[in-house]
Picture 1 (spheres, rainbow, N blue to C red):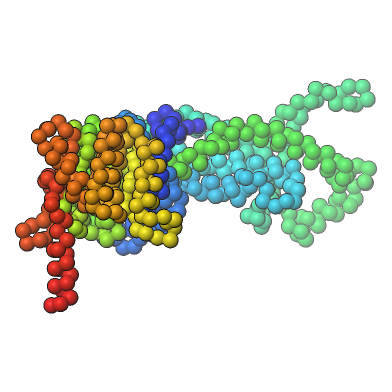
Picture 2: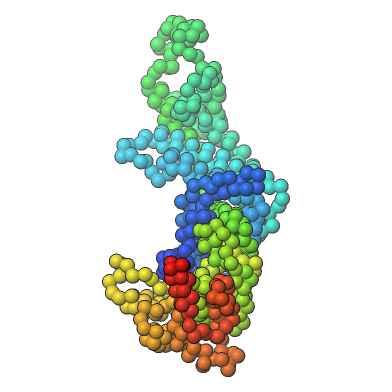
Length: 542
């Protein structure tokens, strides 16, 4: 039984994870996103009353799915439609995740991965466990079917409609009734094995009817099973009047006429019961084999969609607009009021958004005032791109971009004890590893790269590397303080409308105030560091 909620018609994608996922997660701050998506917001009177503790499984699932990008517009839309359905049917996706999680937990307790102790387990105990697993599967599958068909409004996404249709075909009510009938017939075998059976006034006895022929010497032949069923009989408590009466009658029946207490007969009866029940359970075994991995898939895939629903709630908590991105040409980038999601989640504020529309662009260079929001702007694009490519919504009024199955990040790093060489050597080493993996159709985000050396040397390094990567078909978005590099690129391209290069600058008002918006602008000749100096020093001396 397939689930296919992440991919149309298949359980797994053929895409590879991003190169150096650890750097992408670290530099874009995605751990905050994973954490928030794993927390449920509890509302009261329309306001957030409390935040539940994060679910580690939701965090790990979202991390895994986000780091494995989709490669086509159709696959992205497939997930977006399911997310939209799950937003409309939030309780459905919560229940689907809960049901599958609880089954896997109970199955583990029953010994899914084998006996937890080294002691030998009897065949009878194993058989009882198998029966319990069939019971568990049947009950859970019935609960899922009820959930799938109890929605007041129909699903609109292809993924959920197909899942419901396939499930109804694989586990119809007729199949459930047949399984429950067999389980009821063999219930005598597990009766009394559970703690909850203690204290009952009824006990379950087997009724086994067999047809056979007799040969010479009264030997059985042509043995055939006619009926197996369980009958409930009133349980006689020890010491009761009826129990003493039965003992009185039995005491007066000669031993030669009684087989009730014959140990040989008892052993043969147990062997017969075990063989018959084993045969019937084997016939039901197709259920556990068919759905053996089904619940793992349901839990994993529903976890992703539940994370998406909770992430949407977190976005709305900071009063931000969100949208489902649209796929366009790789050289185009168009968004309206795009916000840096991680900053918004961490500070719980509606951060300032940016808007831009680029056509036929291979290189975007952002310069301008220090602390003007340049790195935040770059991260907002990187976060939105990763989210789009796994089917998630983004924190913007609108967002359209191409698909880049290979995304690379090269952000400047603070010097720490893990560095075995200088910062420039470390930067060049990371860039060398990226160059070995990067190629046509890749996206590279550079944040103040090569700023750990002199402005002149850093500009030369940046120019040579970026020019070579552009010729290799790599799309590059860079934030830089290397003004010589930026001005050189500008001089080479300013008279070429089709150069594929766009320049932005962090907006600064005449009085030095930062608006944290990026505007189309040729490279500045300064980063306006004196503004910050005067603000800080002036504040201290005033």
